[in-house]
Length: 149
Image 1 (tube, rainbow, N blue to C red):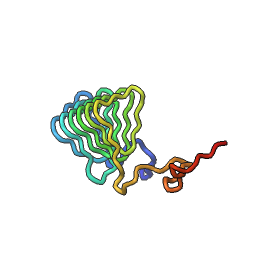
Image 2: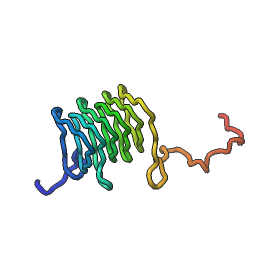
Image 3: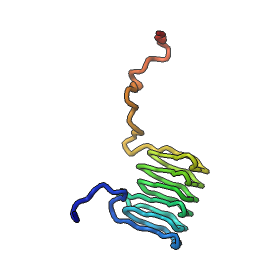
Image 4: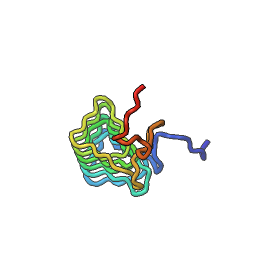
């Protein structure tokens, strides 16, 4: 009951909410989950090594860069977004800046006014090959004749 941890939609480290009436000026450094319904004028940075999540809600706005492993945007961001795990751009997301991501999920209606920049993981990999896909070394050479059925 009290001691058991079940799967929750929150990252480890606590939950912080900036309500619609809240306006923050300056850098925000956090761990856990940060929900933004108000306005932030400054950068948002997750603590190094944390499994942090930033959610910019529909009424939320950020004027500054966001750096966190997991980011969900459904509001407005004026600045670059850096996500090294999972980035979700929901239907009402508007980003004026570059988006750096490892894995991205973008819903119809989301808007990015900048570049989408795929960044590889630290081990140099990008993602697993699709099931049934042949590795590049096993693929037919370009000058080999094609099989026609």
